[in-house]
Image (cartoon, rainbow over all chains, first blue to last red):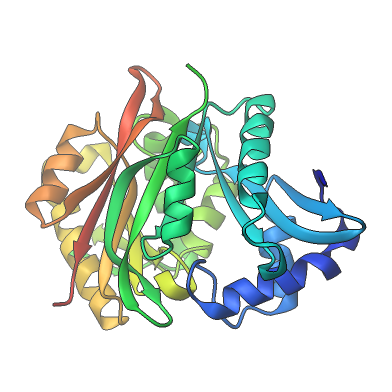
Length: 162
Length: 162
């Protein structure tokens, strides 16, 4: 197991994970028909940093880290995590989230915020809670789930420095 | 009084308002030293629509409207409003907010969200409340106010369609 910064060459291995998750329309606020080129800009180019979870040359997970709000909000970062369906239940999300908190501190951020967690994504909500994130907001019917329809979205937040 | 869509030519009249408000670092999550060129991209180019509040050929207020989250979140829009210090207390923010809700409905949005209202901006919080926005989230110390230091930021939300 190895979490390392992603390179341009990793995109071929990241894209299948992104595509599988985003086209389902159940967890991420990206267009379900996002193209490979658009996704590369979103996931690899726009964020401040992108990482991959690699094992034996294969990529099973990925996350990005970026500043959540500029100027007076720039001490708070935002991350998004994706795990390949072939590697679920093995703790990759936990490993990547803990890794991202360490990176955030190294980059000088004081807090981390998730802006748009579908409340129907119960596994994620439970996991972020276990990792110290507090639900600080509930956006009524803000997430249009592909199967369940309109569900609330949660804002989750963790202060990393004391 | 006239609220109309902004043109490229309006930027010369919008910029002084943007600059005055953003450099103060008290209300908006933009870098306080944002340049005129960067600001034009942020306020005029990136949003879906930008409007000005015009009177006798002068611009006293402006707002943008954009989709807040893509894909499963794209039924919720986001707006930001700015009023020149020379025109405060005359109801321009109310007029622009009501106008924006009408435009949002015409564009097919179902709800409007403000992501990052500094809790210290009591006038704005009170006004949005009066206009039907509910505080649905409180981000602890997420706004680094230029004078007051870290203050909470609020997430405010209004469902426009029933």
